[in-house]
Image (cartoon, rainbow, N blue to C red; front, side, top):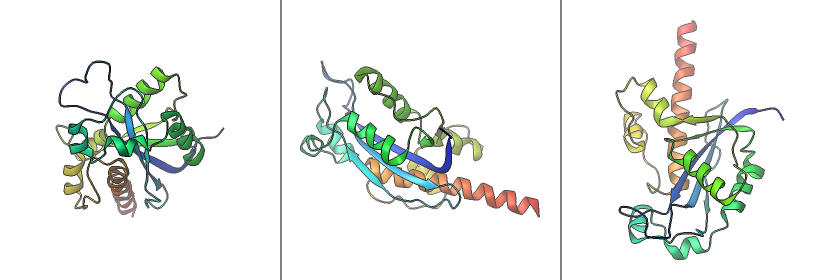
Length: 191
C-alpha cells in the first residue's frame, strides 16, 4: 500500500508512573493515547482525541494522578491496549501515515508494550521526534520541554499539561508552526 503524506499523526501518551521505580510486579503501561492529526498541506490541526486504556499490569499511583489528573477509576473504564491500537490503525491509518511525538518515550513505550503483549505495532517506520527537530531548527544546544517550546513560539498551552489529548493538540501546534515557518522562509527565499 502507498504511504500517505496527507496527514501527520501527532501522538502523546500518558503511562502509569511512580515517584521512583515501579512497585514489585508492576510496570509502566499506557493509560491514555492522545491523537491530533495535522493536515500537511495547510498545517491545520484536524481533531483532538483521547483514548483511555485500562492497564493490565499496574495501578495508577497517587503520584500519577497528581501528574496527569487520571485516576484508577477513570482508566478502569478504558479499553484494552489492543483495541486502542486497532483504533489507531483503522480510524487514523497509522500504519500508512507519518507519525510524530515530542521525544522518543512514546515510540519506545509503544514498541515495548506491543512486544510484551504480542500485539502488532500500530505504526509504520516513519516517526518524527519533534523535540529533536525543534532543537535542530532553532540551533539549541539541548532539547527543551514542550511547555518551553510553546513559549518560544508564542503559542498558548491549551488544556491540561500531561493529559494525552491536550498534549497531542499542543505538540501538533508546535509541529504545524515549524512546518509553516519553513514554508514561508522557502517561499520568501525563492522570490
